[in-house]
Image 1 (tube, rainbow, N blue to C red):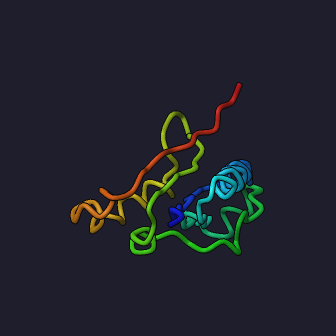
Image 2 (image 1 turned 90 degrees about the vertical axis):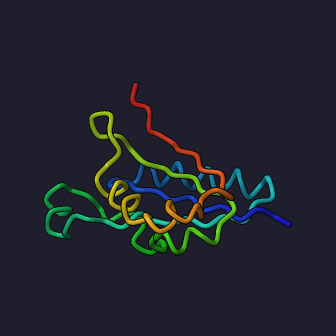
Image 3 (image 1 turned 90 degrees about the horizontal axis):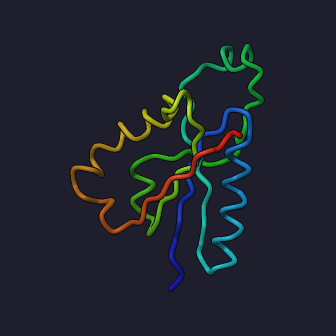
Length: 118
């Protein structure tokens, strides 16, 4: 009975997505069933183009609270902006009120991953 794990990431320029793909590889080697889910973008395509953001992971399925209920474990991959999670990830977490209130996450392992700049 292999655990089913979701890796939910937000990656404007691709660095965090690459980390998520490496995490997926390791989890699959350990026998987990793994899906990569992209955090929904809150910026318009016009704003992203002005920022030089290449539209990372457009083919990856979008994460939502309802989708995450189906997983045994959840990992979050996100950059930090001045020590804070990006607004896109905060919006996803805020949309999961139903799951937090019902205790739906109690059966799942939740972990986080941060980019470290040296």
